[in-house]
Amino acid sequence: MQTPWADAPPDPLGEALHHLRLSGTFYCRSELTAPWGLTIPPIPDHLWIHVVTAGGCRLETVGAAPVPLRAGDVVLLPHGEGHRLRSGPDTIAPSVMDLPHTMATDRYAVLHHGSGGEATTLICGAVRVDTPGARDLLDLLPPLLHVDASPRTEWIEATLRLVAAEARELRPGGEAVLTRLADVLVIQVVRSWLDTDPAARTGWLGALADPRIGRAIALIHRDPARAWTVASLAAQVPMSRSAFAARFTALVGEPVLAYLTRRRMHLALDRLRAGAGVAEVAGGLGYRSEAAFGRAFARVVGATPGAVRRGALTTRRP
Image (cartoon, rainbow, N blue to C red):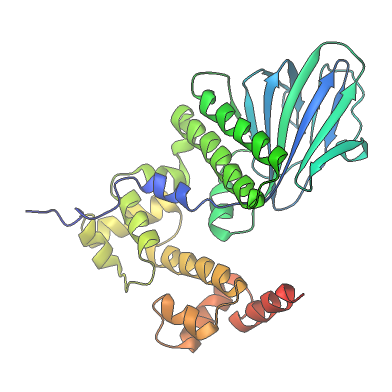
């Protein structure tokens, strides 16, 4: 006999990472010789990823101790904050935007910089975060994720070799491949952090790891249009209604139905931006009337569905 949760997703955390989709990737391979320094500007709605493929350097962010990096290390700055990379504490660090680059493609550049000393090679990526699901997850991450060189990073290095090859060869569909590889890189770093840092299992991420609340979240993500209630989700886990409601709020930080509504509205925002009609989106997310959908959307997003769709269509016109 099957339990009530027999069909629930077995890996709610993995399912959340599945929805971490990114876009607008730009890569740069930097060939650097000491002494050298680079100032990386902040970019809103982006994240930075850096991989040291040879040599070493230090990464400096505001209000934190410098982080030494060596070959094989990977760092992710999920919030796109400005920072410095340099060979030593006193080296001049001009803005990377002011240094000459050789453009291999419109999304891949090569930078040569430094004074002829010890060599360091970096591969850096700027990735736009433009889906609500991705932002929800990245907002929970610390300002910097550092993955030390280890057997785990071999997968990351292999992915980066694919990035470099794809950027050089300019094959059809290369931009889409680079974007998907960026997804893979970021997920690899986040997954490594989840595996090794106890702080990763707090808040919403901790809720995903909870055997019952994590499954409930995964059920919502799998079928957001279903007419879920607190009682029906509690039965799927299984827990009593009151215990489930209390535990969900304690771990996630908001009541279960508020979470469900916010998840639906984030999906609606993506679909409206893609040009879907308001009635189509409302029906696809389980709303029987556009009016009820519109009220929920405006409350969560702060704009009407029609305004978002009109803006998306205007943007899409040539």
